[in-house]
Image (cartoon, rainbow, N blue to C red; front, side):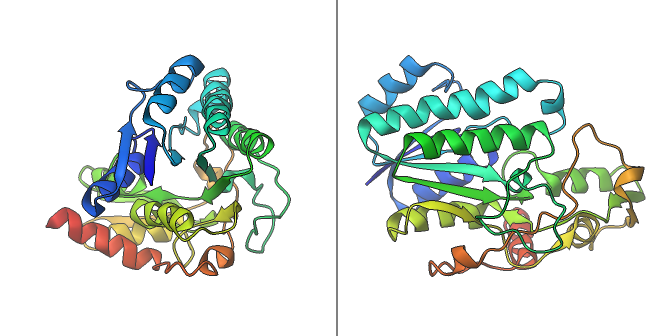
Amino acid sequence: MKYLIAGGTGQLGTELTNLMKVTGRSYISLGSEDMDILDKNKVRKILRAENPSVVFHCAAYTAVDKAEEEKELNWKVNVEGTKNVAEICKELGCIFVYISTDYVYNGESSKEYKENDLLNPINEYGKAKLAGEKEVQKLLDKYYIIRTSWVFGKYGANFFYTMKKLAQSYKQLNVVSDQLGRPTETKTLANFMVHLVESKQDFGVYNLSNEGRCSWYEFAQEILKDEQVEVKPILSKDYPQKARRPKNSVMCIEKAKNTGFNIPHWKEALNELKNSIVS
């Protein structure tokens, strides 16, 4: 089995590339400079030449606030780019794995969101990712859509590094406490992507995050518990952002667990990340 990673230089793509490398799997990892997903002819040429069994589609526009203003670019990358890759996968018959987001839900429910719950995104990023999902479902039969949330990890820019950096400059940090979700470590997500394919799970949509739930405030507290900084809770209304965020984006992960995949608690994953950086 041969894997192709689109968006291989991003935080998840780098994690996947590392996983492929250390486990000796056959793969090719391509960044945007290697394969521009907006250039359909180039995508076709590369995929035909490489002939992968599976395409991990990690290439995405992920600047949630900027997406409110850069609507066209957000849509081009997350919808048109996804469609380009999916269409070539259909031609070649390969499995397509698409990474989506908790932002496809509106966050108004007090319950955990299940895969078949109503989809009603409240920001431009979520709207584009949902449109990308629909393109995948329309074009393909052999696909996995994985909705994930609050992604952090060893590579790239993410909440973990943002908090660490801010703690070096400030003695007090104010972090939103009224938005709830599940953090997801990139290593957990990368392993799950491979697990779905190699254990031949049913095609379709899966929610995947680490076990446990928290607010951004609680997440920051855990990240910075060994730092000399005070973390104070604030409300979303006191921290205005261009893009609206769901108040509750806690997703139900029972379907993922029922595949036999072991999902660590987010605190366990965070501690592993901290140890890997120290070592």
